[in-house]
Image (tube, rainbow, N blue to C red):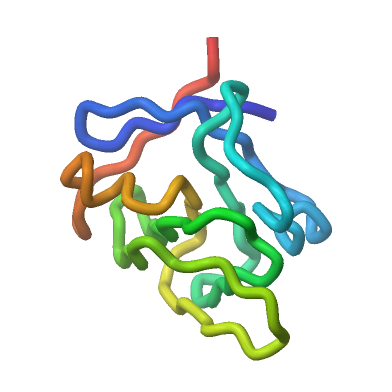
Length: 119
């Protein structure tokens, strides 16, 4: 399923991950394509942590609670070992997008996040 994510005046084509398997795999071994430029993780709990195991590109990890950004981990590097750094945060939703996007577009903690059905 694809939706549009609105942060500030920016719109991102977003792929929604809902199943435990989809959430576990995330961006492992993948790059963003013209089909989507963000991933939305629907989490089962408000506290979680992400890692970049087997990712091939740096990622910005954005935690969202009640429609607002609570935490951004900028430009998280890929990790090829079992001892990967964890990036924790609070939010029932988490977005991954290409590393450096948040700084380049001035997306900050506290920004409002809205979603619409992709047209």
